[in-house]
Length: 260
Image (cartoon, rainbow, N blue to C red; front, side, top):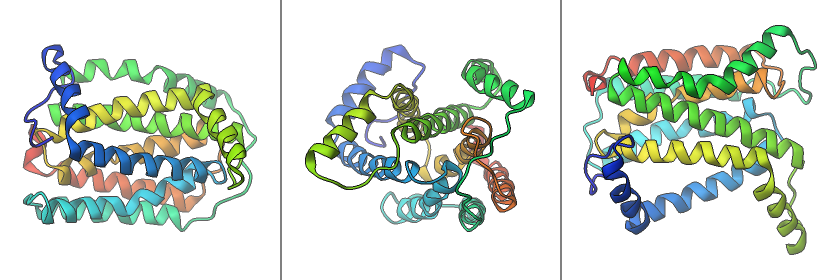
């Protein structure tokens, strides 16, 4: 995306050029290939475990992104960005070491129904933000909401399909057919496609060592969705982890480049 230059997902004139670049750049293809592998492993994990327990697996990516941005992309990773990445990683690690209860909570209250309804409408809530947020944070919010809802929808679909186990080729093909035809997973992939397009657009004019921590709100949305929509029991340790992740997001706002 650094080769492409500045991109704006909301600019129709540059959208065709952006799509063409995504389909012809070998670095993008390599990135997509690794993301597909990650997605397949994620499907297996959420078919067996709670989403609120699986999400912290991605924690180390914040530090790795900052390290590889410094080593490969020659980015100037500021002290604030390092602190934000490490704080977010600590928060998600706290979530990961909490208990993983085998059952989901059975209680459904009026508050949960209202929150679930709000989740469904929240993408429309993002529209007014384009008039008040700096560009980098507008994209960060879109990425976080789209990716967060993608995680929730994918997890809901995989819970319907059931635990994925390695088997014969016909059995694996049958599972694959169930995955690509499940309406929840289709919605999840749609959300994550929007997240991906927003992410690569942001990377064309902002450092990955900034963009990645700025989108950590995904974890908060995913864990809230796990509680209200998937009916998972969220332990105290996971709630503490969410608070620490929030602190990490606040730290990254101190970076001067957040005004982009």
